[in-house]
Length: 120
Image 1: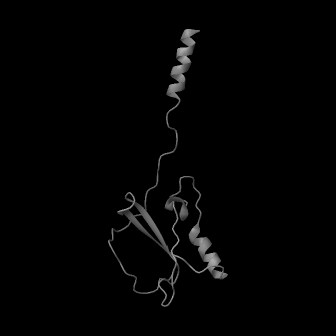
Image 2 (image 1 turned 180 degrees about the vertical axis):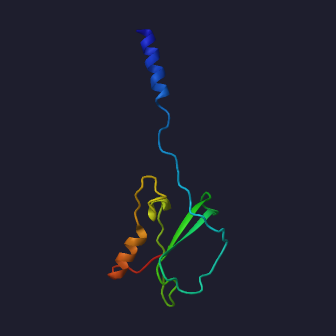
Image 3 (image 1 turned 45 degrees about the vertical axis):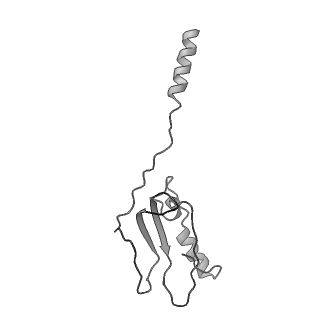
């Protein structure tokens, strides 16, 4: 009985390892840019990818920025919408679970029916 308890204890300890999925996200190839300016309105929705974005306030991270069709329009005051987890916001391929919130598509749909003003 004592040997069984030791065996059970060892089995429990061994089975307690972290089995959560690891981050398998591979970012789309990008060019490292420190700053840029968009000269002409863009024709289609665009997602900009910034690898290793550095900040004084948070750890270095990957950054994805969605720009709506026509950005930048003269005289339009764009609001910013910050999402906490860029990994699931736009792309199914970068999501841990193969599902994305598809915020870019939702924003387009709401904008078409004039339910919202487009944010960035």
